[in-house]
Each structure stands twice: as structure tokens, then as C-alpha cells.
Amino acid sequence: MKLVYIEWVDASSSLGWHYLDKEGTSLICSTGWLINKTKKTVTISSSYNDSGKFLDQLHIPACVIKKYRVLKEYPAH
Image 1 (cartoon, rainbow, N blue to C red):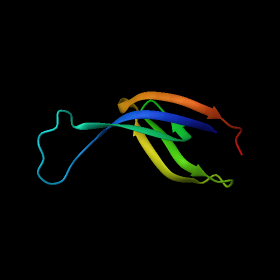
Image 2 (image 1 turned 60 degrees about the vertical axis):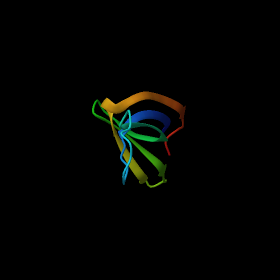
Image 3 (image 1 turned 90 degrees about the vertical axis):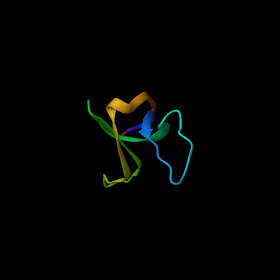
Image 4 (image 1 turned 30 degrees about the vertical axis):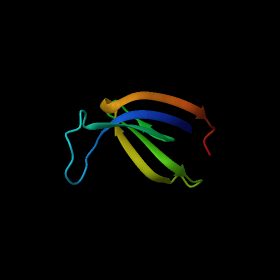
């Protein structure tokens, strides 16, 4: 299993009356266990168990990823 760090751009929004923001996106920093990586998406999870189940999966489109780094690699259980 790989523990990864990903910086990616996401849409942002606000409620109510606001002055026009200069940029309508947010830079998001996520860490998690790498589940799957393809040309289109990277999927990470906050936790996994010994029966192969993953908790809180996040699917990030590859086109919005700005930085991807493997923090540490652990033997699979």
C-alpha cells in the first residue's frame, strides 16, 4: 500500500452576497491510501482494513492534479 500526498484544484462557492473573487477555485491538499491510479483518475482512501475494505474513497480527476507524491510504501496486508 502506498501513502500519497496530492495537491489538486477544486471549484469553490459561497452563499449570500459577496464581492467578486479574483479566482473561483481552491487548492486542495489531500493525503490517503492509494487505491487506484489511471490516466483519468486517482482514487485514495482515508483508511482500509484487513478484509480489503476501504473507508471514505475520494476520486480525483487527473486533469486537476498539480502535485502527486508517494510519502511511504508499506507491504500489503
